[in-house]
Image (cartoon, rainbow over all chains, first blue to last red; front, side, top):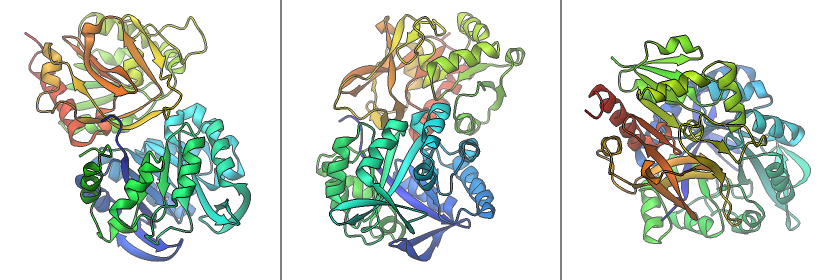
Length: 251
Length: 215
């Protein structure tokens, strides 16, 4: 069967709690991060992503503690993102037990950070996250948690990030985020062909078949939040469905 | 209680490895000084990152020769990821052609070549076990053949002596995903990140050492 499609629950963490919004706003509480992480681990998650969506200086310390506690109890890869600006930020997260960090805004504002981080810690732990919104037939990159439009084209930016040493691209469709309407498959298809590093699909997972479609569109991994938080279906359901469709998964 | 020396040479996820081993009530010490190896029962060489930097760091900390001696004396050794690759002669990753690894085993560390492959090889892949030796028998005990383990790498060792191979994995090419001898186990995958099955493998290794090895 070979390399499995990774199913990755994403936990948006705000001041030490898991929350989930729709199209980047309207946040609702969804539990204690360590407890949620443990549950997902037991359900068969292949990796976990924590996105620290407040990322103020004060929240940063809380996040480090959450990462530490989680890493002590959950032995699968853990990626942490949100508010990472410096090499020091990355170092602290990796020391706290994160296996990878995901950089978004800071990578756009200072692409050298990707290069520096990748050569210092290895490409395998540097994920570049891209929030993309469709505008006039193209995908525009947004930063600051989806609040600020940039001049960058998502496809070109992803390739540039790869060149700078990103180990993976985490691509979120802002149009689909939290809607459970399915991933933006066009975007995945086009971008996965242009990348030699793994592409993680994000934004829009709403039912089991969405994961299969993302895999067919070239995604190496699928991120989902709402779907799992509100227990619309379990990771196990998704994996069994994929397995029946002959997509490689770790059961 | 077993004393585990976890080599701290600035390359990677010590905390994860440490936590996984501590789950089994062992004393784990992060070691960057060769003198601290004296009381250790097991040496663990973890590592994520670049081959050449790892060699340089080990030499700078004067750990390079002690590791060679340790393995030479057939003391229990666990190598993970880069800690597996370092056991070989040299790596294609290194720009300096003459930079040698620990040279415990013959063979080079080579890069995945297929153009259509996503590199790094990142995620969960299966291992086909080669149960024919004492340590690989016990290390895989209770773990099903073709179980999934977590990988993150762009290079892999190609051992000249195929009898060393404890498991193989397919990623367009079939490569040696772990090796074992009577006292050493080293894997390209990360047992400390491979969930329950990974922890089981670590536990098996520790039990093997507690049991006094292959006597």
